[in-house]
Amino acid sequence: MSDDHITRQEMKALDILQDHLRQVLASIKELRSLVDDWIDNKTEDIEAHIEKLGNIENQANKIKWRILDQLSKAETMLHREDFMRLVMTIDEIVDYAEGTGHRVAILSSWKPDEKSSSYVREIMDALFKMIMTLRESIFVLTQNSENSINIAREIYKLERNIDTLHRDMTKHVYTLDIDHKTFSLALNFIDHLEDMADIGEAVTDAIRIIAVARKGSY
Image (tube, rainbow, N blue to C red; front, side, top):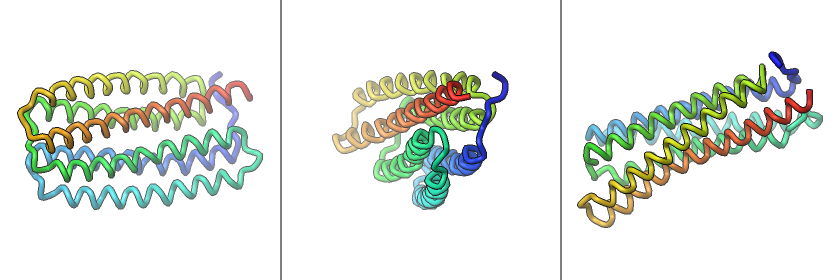
């Protein structure tokens, strides 16, 4: 199947969803910049990054409600509830990005060692790649459901890689000679990063449900 049928309602919703995904991607970029500045000991810039993350979240919320409003009017649209679930799940990533930024701010007095820094940067790179792949998979939904499913499978691989990095960094943190407060904050921070990957996996599940349903409908 080289070209799936797509309704006008689906196309409109997916067009707005692409705007939303740009904000999701912007939040991950901003969080990555924040993390880089923290690791590079440029802690004076952290609050500016958090402010930008807040602005991105506000913009993402506005777009989210535009999509949901569009979907609420599309009473005859197939898979409407699945699209709504997809939108709501994607939006959680932006919320978590801002929350993670605040966790870095609380943790900013700790200068992570080289190995911890390497783990964090690897996780951030994998999260960025995951969001890029999610965006591609959703874009392809308008063209070819089978291709969308195939692209989505790559996200599961990225999530497993983040799981491995999360476990390895957690083990490493347990070996560090740091005070209990810093230890707890560090674990909470890396758990939050891993939670973002789990949300990405949930988004992938939602994409596959829509893609499989569309294949069966047309």
